[in-house]
Length: 531
Image 1 (cartoon, rainbow, N blue to C red):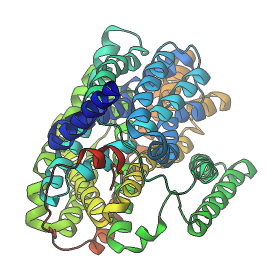
Image 2: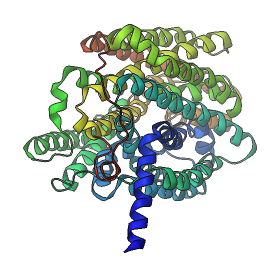
Image 3: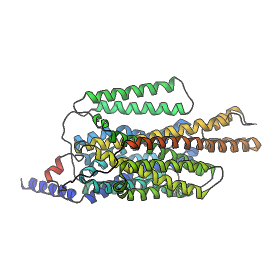
Image 4: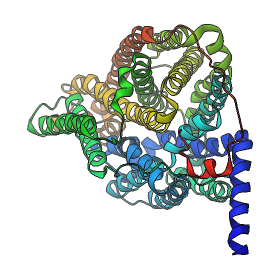
C-alpha cells in the first residue's frame, strides 16, 4: 500500500511540475515540432539526386515528396482522438519510435516504391506527434497574451525546421548519399524519446463516446482520392483514371461530413466552422501552406537544375526565406496586439503576393540580389499570415473544443502542404510539357520523355548529343522558366484571394482576464490537455 501511495505522490508531483513549468513544456513541444518540420523540407534539395539514383516516374516522384504530408494530414484526426482514449504521451512516444524506424527504411531504400512506403510511414509517425503540440499549448497558456508569445516561439521553431531541412540536406548531399537526409531524424528521435518521457505528463480525454475509426478512414481515403485527381488533371490527363478518384474522394468527404453531423460525439465538431473567424483562419492556413511548400520545392529545382547550384548552395540560397520567417514569428505577438488579426493576416498575404510577383524576375541567369529580396519578403509575409491565422483559430475555439481545433489546424497545415505540392507541381508540369513537343531534330519519343521533368530532359539531351541535344537542353530550360512564371502567377492569385478572405477576421485582439493557476494534480492527469 505504501508503495502505491509513494508512486501516486510521485506522479502527482510530476504532473504539478509540468503545470507550473509551462515554458519547459513549450520547449518539449517545440522539439517535437522541429522533428516533423525538418522532415517536411529536408527532401527538397535531394529530389534531383533521388531522381538520378532511383529513376522514378513523374507520378512516383510526386508521390515521394507528397505522400508524407498527405498521409500525415489524413491521420491527424485519427491519432488525435486515439490520444484522447489511450493517452497523448503514449501516442507521442510511439510516434517518435515509428518516425525513427521509418527514417532508417527511407535512408536505405533501393527503389521508388520502398521510398514511397517509408515516406508514408513517416507520415503516420508525424500524425502521431503533431496533434499534441497545439492542444497542450492551448491548455498550459490560458492567457491570450502569453499564448500569442508561445505560438510565436512555436512558429519560429517551425521556420527553423524549414531552414535546417534544405541546409542540412544540402550539406549531407555534399558529403554523403541522398539517404543520409533521412538519418538526421534518428538523433532527434533519440533525444525526444527520453525528454518527452521525463517531462511530459500523461493525460487522457473525458472518454465520452466511441472512437469513430470508420469516419477517420473515410476522411483519409477521400483526401487521397481528391489529391490524386488534382495531380492527373494538372498533368493534362482527363480520363476515367482521373475522374474516378476525384468523384470517389469527393463523395467520401461529403459522407464524412454528414456522418459527423449525425454523431453525438463526432471526431470533428463541425459547429466550430459556423464561427466566421474560425473557418476563415483555417482557410488562410491552407492557402498559406499551399503557396509555401509548392514554391519551395519548385525553387529548389530551379536553383539546382537551371542555375546549376550545388545542393549546399541551394540550401544557403533558401536560408533567408526561413530566417525572415523566424523573425516574423518572434515579432508576431507584438504585431498582433498592435494591428489585430484582420490587418495582420491581410498584410501577410499581401506582402507574400508582392514577393511572388518580384520573383517573376527569375530567368535563365542567376540574379542573387533579386532572389535574396524576394525570399526575405516571402518568408516574412507567409509567417505573418500563419501566425495570425493560428492564433485566431485557437482563440476562437471554445476551451473545451481546443483539442478538436488543434487537430483541424494541423490537418489544414499538412493538407495545404500536400495539395500545394500536387497543385503547383501539376500547374508547373502543364506549363512545362507542351513546349517540348516539337523541338527540331529531336524524335517524338525523346521529346515525350523530356516532358516528364527537367532532370529527365537533361538526361535525354545528353544521350542525343550534338546540336539536337543542345537544342533540347536549351528548350527544356526555357520551358521550365516559363512554367515557373506561370506557377508564380497562380500562387499570387491564390494569395490575393487569401487577403480578401482574411477581411472576415476580427479587427482587434480581444484578451479576456484569465486567472492562471497551477492545475490540481488530479486535474492535470485526468482532464483533457486540450481543454
